[in-house]
Length: 118
Length: 203
Image (cartoon, rainbow over all chains, first blue to last red; front, top):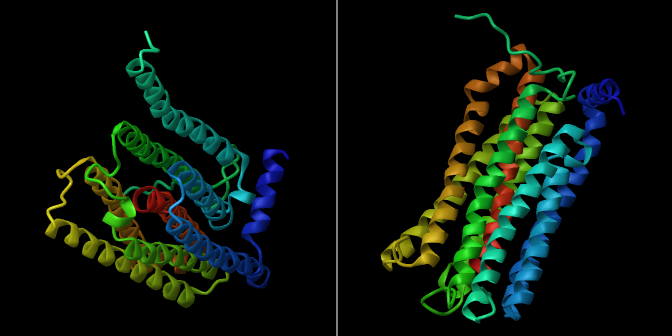
């Protein structure tokens, strides 16, 4: 889609009539209920006292689903412009890098203390 | 006073396809991701480097107040939908409803802060300050920074509810865009808590 046709689409969206816009409200309520349910599941799973690696994996998966719902529906990322998606993709890449750094450090530390390192 | 008008605050910019204010708030949120990302990264490094977490023994869920944090999670999620409904009311040309939903959003923000105050007060009574150990240092730093963001959101939302809403009379579309931008920030604050809650309280 060209920039101009994207702008036209956005202008159409911005000029939806109040009646047309009411259609979107249902999705907000659905996401709200889903977020509350997922919060209850997060706490419920924590009560099971699973092995730590499993507990961390499950909790982060649920948190990611919740974050995805908030970002895609409440923040309208599903229908957002390419320029914003591009900015966020770059941000996610750097965020991933920042999160990977501790893992590399821990791995190197483990290698050194077990005598497998340099 | 200058008569300079900032361009593309309502109409989409021909290059980006979105109004300048919205592009700016997304760039700001990208920088916020890196701010909290650095803290999460530090948390992972400190936690994996510790022989036991929390250092004094036990589990995070036994040391921190999970029921209060769960309640606060529900409060923040509810404030997110009331924020969306405030913006949706603007889109549906209904200013009184906008004011109602925005007032509820601000009230819920205060509820979150009051619950957090009781959490902090209890920890301080026990002598569990940020200087106690790395666990409490991380806990207070991350929840404290998040709390500062809540206060920032309250200030912006209060402005939009009161003085800022005068713009509705002269330029409702511009005002609606401002509410949308404030909403994007508010949802981001909710998003951060979605990861903070399990990371600090449950794992």
